[in-house]
Image (cartoon, rainbow, N blue to C red):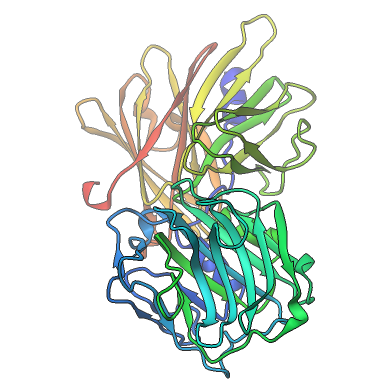
Length: 486
């Protein structure tokens, strides 16, 4: 029983993910002056009433967008016809930012083709006077090589380029990326920062002459091209936002980690006190990719991992490369969880190991999991002295009640239980120890976890399972279910 108690103690999942609307919630809390999710329309979700008009060729893909199944399909931009979005922005508009005003422009993008020249993500540019600013992907017109795919922020005044700062790496890898450009209003290129997936990018300055002329105009703000249709984007653009402030690195990372469809978690990461944990990553793509990784303790605070000297790390992997973050069995028990963003092309898994004097080390391998949703189901087998444990997590910002139903292998219900979880709370326990689930002992079947409160779809549940038999440790995957299937 002591070993069982240790196992349940170290089975730890703390507040690791938030509800599927958290990206938008966090973004709106940062007070944008315009926010266009592009979820089937060009409406402004910031509350400032800057609704846009989509081009006649703008469509919405059947594929899931960057925020997962909770968001509408992604907008598709194509240079073959007018698909750009136009938002009126006269001289009096808050979007008519000048060259000495802080700003941030961000969006989720996925390139499909690499049009020679450049592709506008979002811009406030007047083609008639050749004046304005824009966030774009440089495919060769500003200094990048052909199809270079470099993120760039540019200012133009009277057809004169007064600012051009661009990344040194390509984003043309076919995957979704959260891109952002921030400018502190200093009048210098050194005040610009570029980000991809919440991580600052290495940059090069092509032009640094901001004081050469104004960039304001009465032209509309556009997404996916400029008002005359030039510099059209080829691919998907969603979640476009403009701020009249320069978002901090911490805010950019916060937004990245708020994308549930792209985040992954390792719900068990314990070291010391007999435990060793590790998380592995591999880059299977043809481009260098960066993985933001953060570690949090059971108390919800950053957890320092000695091997990296902190609680977070951005890992950049070249094509075909791999990396591991390991926390060895040194000192007293420290436990928590890992949260990582995996760009398309990155795979990963976790390993945790228990060492007990006089016995061989035992390991369990755990696949990184996504957002739980309203329902989870787990297969269990508590026969032959096996015991199933679970970490039941509420990854949402609202108090949640989770109903638990256990069946035997014939599908007959043999017990029910209910647990109340505070916001971002969790309960780690041997399932048969919960009142109402004692009949799981000696049985095998399935366990269903369902959010019963609140009933407005804001609650969520994620489950990590383990089973053990003396010295053996095995992880049990839990999967989601659609509401109509439960």
